[in-house]
Image (cartoon, rainbow, N blue to C red; front, side, top):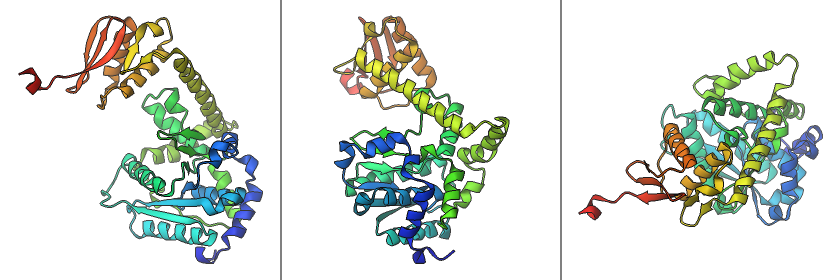
Length: 349
């Protein structure tokens, strides 16, 4: 395999599209790309790690949307956790983008802690994306998640007791606060399909050696749980089944959100009108309470036990004063749930 700087990347991208034509991508993403909203968003940002999925994503976007080539910008975040290998990933991405004439923005994790957790690395990466995107005003961030990621995410969130909103991730079209959107067109493809298509087109990618270890929860699921689960399925396409289940959960989640929108129990001033929810399913009450918490000044981390206690109190509608830490209280009175700040010691004097 020649060095990435000597590869004719436009030719390889065209070859890849023969194996992965546009109609193989997620239909919701294709519909979004054809919408007026997409046309008005300006440049498209692509998360580019250098791995197989992200390289395939960049090449497919470049080949399938030629009118967007001049507006593509790749975002690479160097976690600085693997020394020279991390720097090699960044250089590989530079070579690919140079060959495609795609702009590249590179971020580095300054002061990355040794043995950083999976969650900390993800938070640092997303923070870089958030900082980089306003500079190019893309509005849309394209991500290379595929069907294996769907199954891995499902098992990770199942372990922490997520509901439909969590189990429906990752979504193909994910609106973000502030008007942006995250797009995942590869959710219709398995990782093995993507890797096979890249190999057939003689397209190299970078392998993260940390993926072979068991330090991270996702890696343990990928290496131990998914293979056993697929063997247990005995001929069934377990990954395709997980992808279908994700779609169905997403539909159910959207239906509950729409129902809650129509009821409009949240009033001005972060007041939850409890009689509006009377007789409705517990799942709707739970969502309404989550919305109410987000609308209040409370920014603490309410425990699952505390949330359940507040949910039960709200459903009963009894007069209640529920502590939300030192910041304030959740107060139920006269059929309303509202937030009351704790008076400061100075104010009580």
